[in-house]
Each structure stands twice: as structure tokens, then as C-alpha cells.
Length: 212
Image (tube, rainbow, N blue to C red):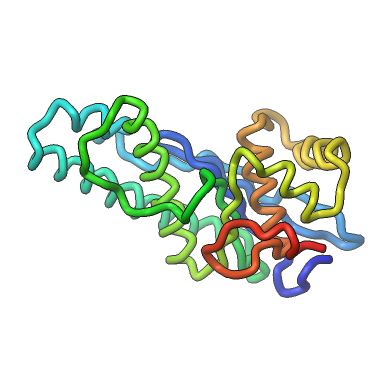
């Protein structure tokens, strides 16, 4: 079920200005263990995490520049953090899973004016895009896992009942101490799916047929 050259994988889930990173490893007997768990800061305190909210109060040129500055900083921070995590995880790390929204892969930030709901969506996309750039910079194969469908897709791809999947996700955090919330579990799930190789190719959304 597991590819021997992919003994460890990194799972990532973005939030506004930061991310959760969890590295999972297959040990002897096929058991999964968390080897790294980290909150990754994606911006310095001098820049606004809710950049689109701030940009709406600026003129077009200033807004564009601010969004570009935040995106550049987020991409740089993501690349540095993922390279560091990859180095600590060892030679067995060759893949990463990223929790995304349903649809195409995360895209570069836009500078268009939009609704308040659109600001939130654009900010989420910006940080997911930064993490994807970081994955690519570290030369890791990327598995994109749609957030809303993640557990259903994983249960199918891993051939597990939902209850068994949830029990295993909870058990992966045993002994680590807090936090082991849904944030960390979803990041671990993304890493798990990347490890199994449930995506057909780099940069494509999860293919539920791949893990059977």
C-alpha cells in the first residue's frame, strides 16, 4: 500500500497568515507516526495578514503593492519553513499534501476589487498558493486534497470505514500533547494521502482511485 521510497510525507493546512505542518512517517509494520508538528508563521508582524481587508481602503496602486509584498513574504516564508522541515524529516521525505478548496490548484493573488466574502476567499487562496510554491521549491511531489471532501475521499482512497479513519487520525496524535485539534488532524490527513500516493500526478486534485 505504501511506496517504499516515500516513507515520510508532509501535510499542510493554511490559515490567515500562518499554517499547520505535520510530517507523518510509516514505520515497520505499516504503522503511522507523527515525526514533526509545527505552526508555521507566514508573515512578519509588520505586514497585515488580512491583506485584502486593508487593501480595500487604499488606492489601486498602493493596494496592488501591498498585496504583492504580502504574497512575496508569504511565499518566501513558506519556502524556508518547508525546506527546514524537509531537512529535519530526512531523506525519506519526497511528497507533501496540501489542504485546498475544491477546484483548480491555488493561483497567484489577484488585485481585483471584490466583496467582503471575496476578501476572505482571496486571503485563503494567497496562503495556500504560498504553501504550494514552498512545496514546489523543495522539489516535493504535491497532493492537493479538497477540504470539504477530504475525509470521504481519504476513506475511499485508503479503503477504511469513516470511524476507523477518525480513530487512526486521533491515535496519530497520542503522546504528542496538545495541540492535536482538527487543524493538525487535517494536515496529518493530507500528509497521509500524499504518502499513500493517492493523487495521480503532481499538482492535481486527489484521485480516489489511486490508493486502492
